[in-house]
Each structure stands twice: as C-alpha cells, then as structure tokens.
Length: 170
Image (cartoon, rainbow, N blue to C red; front, side):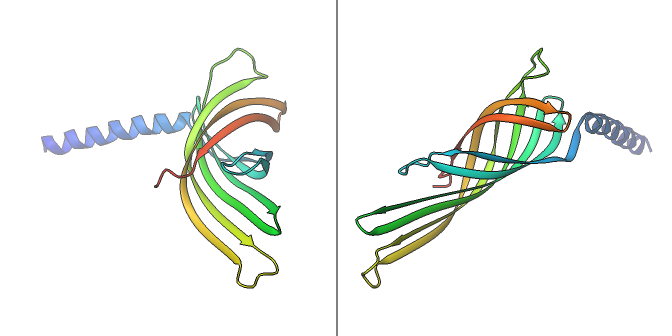
C-alpha cells in the first residue's frame, strides 16, 4: 500500500509540473506568411526563391516554432544545351528570441531539420537521346537568424538569413 501511495504521489507531482510547463507554452497555428528571397546554391548562380511560413506559436517565452515550405529553380543555357535544377524543401525551425528593450525589433537565431526534393534536367536539342534527368531527396539542416519587426497588430516583417546544409546524410 505504501508503494502505491508513493507512485500515485509521484504521478500527481509529475502531472502538475508538466501542466505548469505546458501552461507557459503557446503552441498551435498562429499565422501564415510568404517570403521572397535570394537563393545562392553551390555551383550555380543566384536565383529567386519563394516560400510559405507557418508560425506555430511558442514552446516557451524565448523559443518560437515555425515551418517553412520553399521553392527555387535555376536554369541556364550554354552552347545549345539547356540545364535546370530545382529544389522544393520542407523545414521545421525553432528560433531563440533574444531579450531586448525595444518592442519594435526582436532579433533571433534558429535551427531545424529540412527535407529537400531536388530535380535536375539537361537537354541538348538537335541530338536525339542527348538528355538526362535525375531526382533525389536529401536531409538538410537549416541554420540562421534575423529580426522581426511588427508592422501592425496582425502583421510582422522579418529580415532573415538562412544557411542550409543539404548533404548531411552522405
């Protein structure tokens, strides 16, 4: 009987502690946004990338969670050959929000895993059978940071820079 009371007491204590921790979190879908930026993939020139960002709330007062769906495409032609590479990525990011005195400027750093769906294609017109294409899926790690600036009670503007390591599985 003593053991059962101790186990019950520990279970109630742990439940109370975890509820207190979850009470300070603010998780759930909060907002949806879009982004446009410059993508500079290795071995290719810069191109424009587009994305959709979902704000998933805060795990704690200092840690914000978000997801990112991104797309970029780079095409080049040389000596009559056409080549293109594209990436569709899905990422989950956690950002640590630094404590500052200004409510108009919130700097942060972040990291998170990402999944990249690459597709490459090369065509040489005028030569039958001179084309190739390949697709691959790569695990990645996003590292970055930036600052958030409120524009209105319902809209924020972000200035960010993210670096993606997309060959960490090799």
